[in-house]
Length: 98
Image (spheres, rainbow, N blue to C red):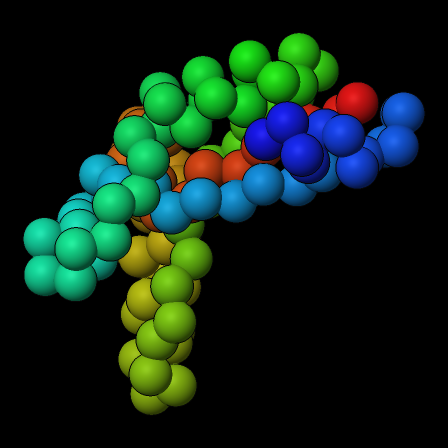
């Protein structure tokens, strides 16, 4: 994070995206089966705030789907984003400004 801040020009922003460890689709596949160790959302926010005091966070749902099932999965994404707590959405995004 410090290196990102160092190379970022004053007044410009860096966009940081991390998969959410506790997303219902990611957790069984990415974390348990594949051993990916994505950050908890609270830790993601903590490490960025320590280096970039000017930061805003967003959360969204997006996955790669087989084309024949795309419409139904897009409905799933919209439902997830509208009713689920942001703590379980698929991606954490930080827009950090120097």
